[in-house]
Length: 183
Ligand SMILES: [Zn+2]
Ligand SMILES: [Zn+2]
Image (cartoon, rainbow, N blue to C red; front, side, top):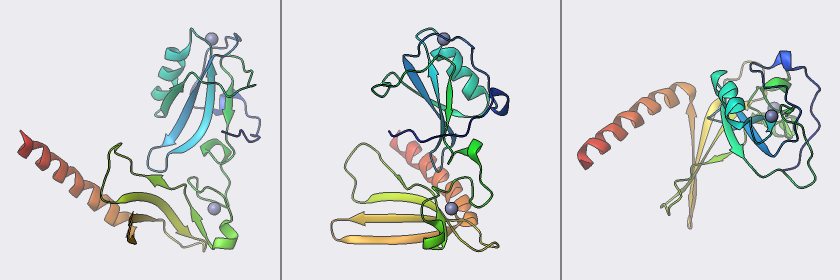
């Protein structure tokens, strides 16, 4: 992944503290604040002794931590270093919703999150992808755009946040029912 320049922020701005260790990092922890949009907000670097402590501190702050031992080639960081993405929650910009990918919003006339593909790691009839979208004008509300595609074409459904909330509840009930009938 290409690292883009981040604003320099002090650790005091972050909702978690990492050990001020200074040993060379051998792994990185991706920090996500929002599971729906899978917003990658930062990367914390860790030495061999501190991955668990760092992940604990990050998850205790209500964030999701994803550990990886592969540092990009040529990347040298100290344990405890946190790289913040300007598109993430700590690089907030009043002109865009926090989840916006900040690409060509003015040109498109709308803000869009990155698209998440719903991946079950097995073949499915449809490829389903979901994104948050919001029209550019001030009073616009975000909507969830669901795309389903197969070999013959695709269809798009636009859902209000209220519908998504009701759908989440309904899907949860369906999952529970499907689980019960399988036993
Ligand atoms: Zn360390
Ligand atoms: Zn935007």
